[in-house]
Amino acid sequence: MTGTIGFRKMNGLGNDFVVLDARAQKLALSPEVVQAIADRKEGIGCDQLIALEPSDEADLFMRIWNADGGEVGACGNAARCVAALIAGEQGRSQVSIGTESGVLGAVVNDDGSVTIDMGAPRFAWDEIPLAAPVPDTQHVEIEGVSGLTPVAMVNVGNPHCLFFVDDIDAYDLARLGPALERHPLFPERANISLVQIISTDHLKVRTWERGAGLTRACGTAACASAVAATRRELVGRKVIVTLPGGDLLIEWRESDGHVLMTGPYALDYEGTLPAELLQSVRV
Image (cartoon, rainbow, N blue to C red):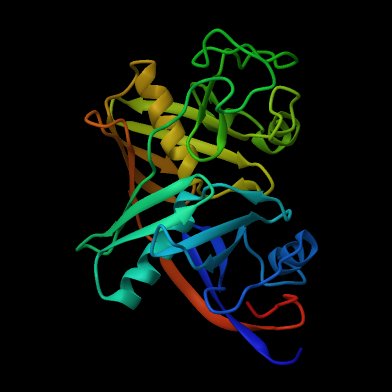
């Protein structure tokens, strides 16, 4: 096959994506192809690769791969980028996005920010999931980790392991993250975050993202951190979460238990990829 396929390079608070439109043409993306595109030296470079696909339940379906080629269920920062794209195409502010973790509602606000309804968080050990039952996912002791337990576990589209600490910069997350991501407790691996309470309406968070490594922003980690801090009665239901790339506003809505995430998005540039690389096939 000859020719090229267009892509958009986008980011949400520095968490960056290569976005491919596969609504009219199915793309067979192997882990090796995803890795090649995500490679920051030889490819385009990104934390996640996003493919936009048709959906019977939403305006489109958003398929997500981490830089290591593994497919994941949710990405809050990417959802804001995709919501802005589809809202612009359709000329309306409210859109819906299908994901492996469910359908997300989205609103492009008057100030240009985007609010994503991330749905209700899950707390049961087998919903996160963990490898074995634990009595309380708010306070879990992790074998082999000293000085940083107990931790909180929650699933907000992805599994999250959250360490509440006095200073998130006092720990070498680049060293802790890889081992903890693949800890035997996490059969599907986990995002590992350090969470610092600044005030009752402000958190600071750093995240090691499974399959991507240290990231400037992880939207689902911001949501998980806010929810876990609220469950421990450390903050209220609406908080600013400061990530290395900037701030997100997170609200854990009391009326229905859904988590709302509001933040910016950016289109960096557009380009093309050789069609042969993507192993594309016609629907």
